[in-house]
Structures are given as C-alpha cells and as structure tokens.
Image: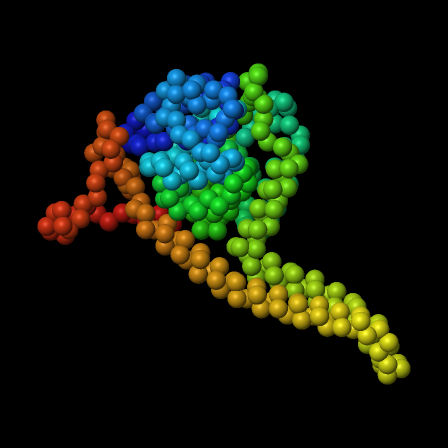
Length: 351
C-alpha cells in the first residue's frame, strides 16, 4: 500500500536569519512538494524582511530572540507538534522535491531520523573549507560514536515526533547538528541517510557560517559530548596521560635514589606524586560519571518510549481514520470508553 502523505500530519520547520532573498522560494517549493504540510518559519531576530516575506509566501511565522540556530530549533521543537518534522535551512540550497522521498523513507521503515546527505557538483555551493571541515568532524564523530552518517552537518533532516519531543537541544549555534546526530546514536535510534541534491545560494544572499569559528565550536561540542556520553573514555584517557607524565618525571629521580640514596630534585618528586594522584582521581571520576551517564541514558530512553509511537498502515498510526483533516485523533482511555476491551491496540514500540 502506497501511503498518502496528504493524510500524514507533517510540519516543515525552517530556522531563518536574514534570508529575505531566499525564504519566499523555499516556502513555495516545499508547499508544492508537500501540499498538506504546515510550513513553519522561525525568524531569529533578522534585520531584513525575512518574516514578512515568509508570511506573504504562506508560512506560519514564529520568532526567537536569542541568536543562534540551536536556540531557534529548541523553540521550534517546543512550540510545534506533528507526527513528522521536516527540518531544512532557509537559504534555498536544499532540494524541496526530495522531501517526499525523505518522508517516505522515514515512514516506510519506521525510523526516527532520516539525514539528507548533500551531493553536488557545484564547487561554489559546497566550498572546499566547508567540505574538508565536514569530513574531518564527521570522521571524528564516526570514530567515537558510530559510522551511521557520512554527512553529519547536513541541515536537511526528517524526524519522528518521538525524536523531536525527546531531544534536549542544549546547543545554541550551528553545533546543533552534531548534537542531533549524537542523540540518535547514543539512544540507538533507527536512522537512515539518503542522498539529496545541494545547490548554491541564490544571488544576493550570504552564508552565515564561519568556517573557522563555527568549526571550533563544533569541535568543542564534540569534546563536551565525549565528556558527557563517554566519561570513562574521556577521563580514562586523561588518567593515562597524567600517569605517563608522572612516571616520566619520576624515573630519573628513582634512578638517582637507587644510585646515591638521595633525592636532590625534591620539587620534581612532589610534582610527580601530584600528577599520579590526579591520574587516580581522574579514573575514579570516570568510573562514577560512567554510572551516572548510564542512568541518564536510561532516563532519556524512557522519555522516548513514553511518547506513543504513531501507527501508519503496516504497523504505524492508521492515517485513513484522519484523512482530510489535520487533527490527530484523541487517545482513548478507560474513563472515555468504560471498558478496557474497547481500547485501540497498544502502540507499537519501535526501538
């Protein structure tokens, strides 16, 4: 059975900052690609007519005063409710015609996130610095957390409601894509990556991404996520480095003591002992925080499971009951029905 996307509650969410030139076409293109979807544009305190142009194009316009893509996405994910969320940048570099393919991939395979991996032959669209930085940072995340994604920094993604409503969104800027990726990997969500076309910005618009500054912020976010999600590895590595430095400083002192019975470099000996104590403390911190992280991961998983799984045809929400309307049917309860036997089947948990 071919699922009718017009019967699915889809929200297209577009974070924007000074995209007056591009946002009108982005809204129009996604309206054509997903006719029944709600188009939400969130303006991040733009100094141009971004909000007005988006509203004229038919988008539902929201506002986020705190600067940064992460802040905008946190607001969008809090304010908007839908069964499927399509996230895309407002710079008209992603192909709206690929949206139905991404959404169908999510629904047909009962996934939580589909990542749109950028493919382009236009060098101006995907500059060497951005391409190199993406490969470097993606490779680092692959090495630490897993190799499910080849384009970690893509701004074109599709999410399930479960993903969006269980995502904490602590980032403030462009490092939000890294946080999205690690969230999916750490909770072992079902994900996929689909190639999507990528093009250069329209004439008159400018990129807000600074290769060096934002690259360093993303690198910092990766380090923080390693500390938060892999504390034993993080503090264990620190322990090994401190222990090796301590041993390196102590070897000449020990040899001198064995030969003469004296310790002439007393400050170095104290430093060596201090470094070894710090190494031991680092290891203990790693062991304790690893237990805490395991508990936090369980709580996040329970929060994810607490959100009912939608049931489309073939195991997910039956959208035929809601065809032609945007309202999601209310969940029946024993108090509503008076008889537990008349309740709908329990939601299928997709892990």
